[in-house]
Image (cartoon, rainbow, N blue to C red; front, side, top):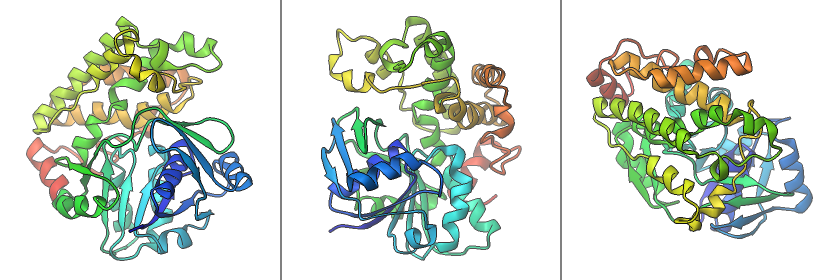
Length: 358
């Protein structure tokens, strides 16, 4: 039976998600802020829908509603899926919260601790609605917009979602609710899902080592030409920092290093050609750099410092990215301080993630 789903964000993931859920028989509202992703929205309206191509669900989806009215989009939804850059999570949360209703399920894709930001905002805004909030490990799918109101997915569909709720005491109820949309696996908590998202160790270092190629190319595809032996060594070293932090916190590790090595070997693994064709980063101001410096490597570095498992490579990459773009990504990022967490040991941190309070 179809569900009422609101997708927040009309970038590549948001548009592809809205179309995919529509093709699956759900009633979907696509909601975006006024003046954001205007080309994408105009193209969908002109075509009367959004076409999905690639390795997942294919077809033309006539999306039920496209709007910038957050109150209308949120108030009638059973599921609210936030498919926007993690740098937008706080601002979008504050637009969603006033219209929340009891019983709604909120999913951040990808998470990057968005659920903690959401709960913090609920508290600040005196919102006591009984909702389930959590995160997806990584993104719904690797995708891009290619052409007018047309999306491309670079990997086959059907992989179960790995999710966690915040607080994690809601995990059982959260998985049961999301199982109406997809098969689900449960993670320990939203720090485990954040740490296991592949972008946290792949995008930033790989992009910085390929700066020259990015700046000389009009349509750079990192996964096609950027996974050189030295880049793989850096990804592996950063993965070791991440894995040491995960081990100290008692989390399972689902490393993406092996997949990156397979992507680099086109002869042995030709089946990943669709994934390799995904464009990006297109400039050094791309989300591969700013998002993964602010909310990936900065988080990793700050978390490591707090629990006594330093991540100097992660911090160095943030420093280099900041120098290239004239920003202070660490000061702007999702550090543990920004999440309201200070001087916690692993046991205290895991209790917070389980219960939702210190």
